[in-house]
Image (cartoon, rainbow, N blue to C red; front, side, top):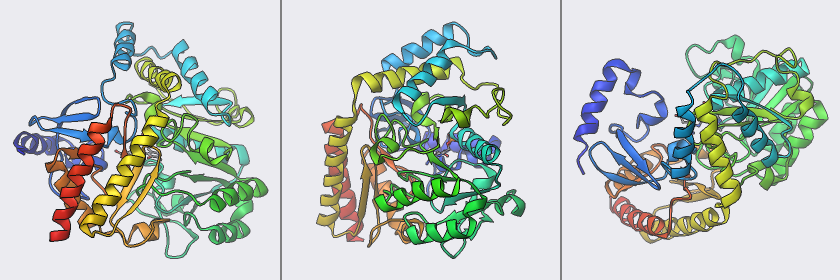
Length: 430
Ligand code: KE4
């Protein structure tokens, strides 16, 4: 496989863009080597500018559950573009997309559209603080909610600690209002609420985690989270930017049977174009300006092209219901990867929720950030490149989830299993 054109493109990009990429997740920092520059996507496949074809398990980090360049999505974007790209005034498409989200997610009575998942989580936190009049928020180590200052906070050594900034530019003053807890740790949660509960405006959580790799919640953890937030008057925010319309049409909350107070969305609701959203009970959402006093605004919020892509995507998911097929393909891929690792004698853990899954190079189960951090990331990096060379594009980090799309079929899954079998055999031979 040649990567010459990508190399040249990367060298050129680095002259004008920090690190040559517009998001660090794409920089291949965790797997070494240089990022591949993509020419186009088609169904389950990516094509790089050197002409190499890959079965794609990134799906743009989640949005492309229907696969690349779905004809009906492209047609709706093209049709919208002919009428103009943005008006700075309300359009009916925004109402239509909001209605689709509300119809799919019973805990959401009103929703505000923004342009990214980060904007959604940032706005939801501000709303929670405005609604409760409290300052403190809590998040979980290993959960990522976008590059919001107050959520770019690392966990301290103990289970519950006042956060310390983990990015330059995030001030201690900002971090001081963020409590960082351990995911799936019920005693730690109860202790944190006993000490801080009356000061907590909100707890934000990935109801199924994608950002330390795929980690499933323990039922008792989610139940405790809902009970304690209600008991202490803190809002429970489900960050479903990744899981919304991914793990089920009603999101993770429909699988878990938990009704959060606020939910954030992104990725799939834009069908690959920039849309984020936050929503919840009307009594909370009506505090958002101009209905209420909590400020939030955006030039391109509810953009006509992005809402066209989002509406097309959600209607295709609602009417086509690919979820049973995605579950079947995901289960087969999980089974095949387990078998490949077993045959190669490579210790792995596999976690999956529908069409999002992670192969962890770990001896024991991954249930929180501490256990995720024990993964053999060097071995993951070697596996990544072994798979690239066999035409399979995996997430370029052990701590990201793989995504299947409705465009993946038996052929793609079997080819992936065959590639993984050879790749893992090579790893174990090292
Ligand atoms: P964006 O601002 O990237 O649209 O969304 C932030 C966000 C919020 N919440 C969750 C649960 C998320 O997964 C994300 C973004 N996910 C990462 C990948 N795990 C996006 C990739 C990137 O940053 O380039």
